[in-house]
Length: 320
Image (cartoon, rainbow, N blue to C red; front, side):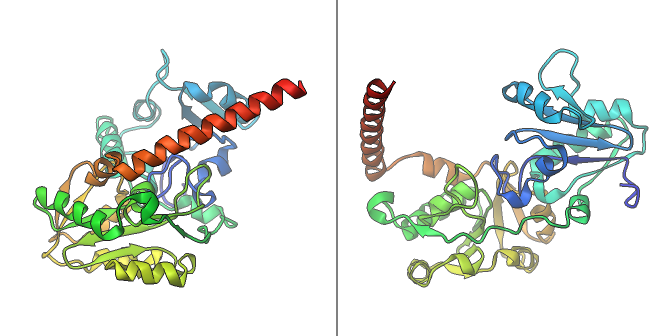
């Protein structure tokens, strides 16, 4: 912080995809504080540190923060200031607060910047402080991606992309940037094991009337899946190429982005002459409307779940 002339640094619990359960690579808040809950934000000033979390984790946070020197701030409780107000109270006008824009959404960055501005505090969004000290940071997962067959998904990737393009055109756009891992998994009928309790894989996607690109580590994609995606009109590019790809977009593109899901770093990458339309991702709505095959799958899952519970209850009665 001193080297970068920052008076405060804020570390959320999210990743570049705004995931509630990020892969190990992006568990920086947990690494620094020891707090393992899925929701929480760490604030570090020159002489103190605090963790903000909600009521689900009050007891857990008290235990995990014990002896760390990090104070617990119980969100939505009387007397607990929100993070911006806390910083306004702690810092002098002109102070500099840093965040890593890759792990902050556009919307949240704007909200916090607006609040801090009331106290004359400046927010800087390109600070990679954690990477400077977390020298043994885990690598981005390379777990293989697996396919969800159409017999389970109900629609192939080409049909889903067509629906997405129709929804995007409704907003006067010809392209969409997808960063939410669940939306990408649904769109391409693929799943992964990169995050605990979530069948997703680290990736980005860009869909336009010119190209359909899945940005993912090629090592994760088998030859057969690559061939299937190619047959559906999808190209594969490396996950790390998303930044250079966005930089070269021309004024032809009218890109739809979800400010609540796209990170600030990618937003600042988009060239100034590219038209940007901000709205909630239409993919979230499309995937929420289940087709007959998916509905039937849910019914089968409920039956299988009921059978499993009955078997467990029987075992419990016989072995207690």
